Image (cartoon, rainbow, N blue to C red):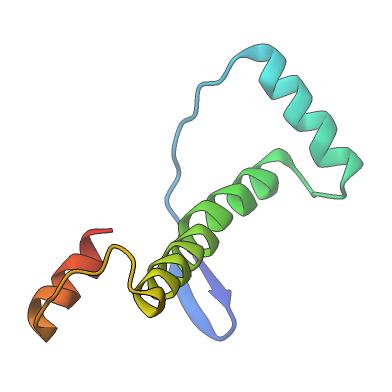
Length: 87
């Protein structure tokens, strides 16, 4: 299945998720209360936050530590890129 987001075609993949019944019920209630169309939309938002926003926060923390001279390792450009990609 394909979907168009901001002019970019994205392939969608289906997954199976097993969660405890009480967590599913609470998630459905939360989804309704906060205006999600369905629980799938709610779960997708949670994943986006983890994958994108927390990664940005982690990079910002690393940058701040570097500016302050904390936990700074001396890398050449290639090693620095490999290190950042490994985070």
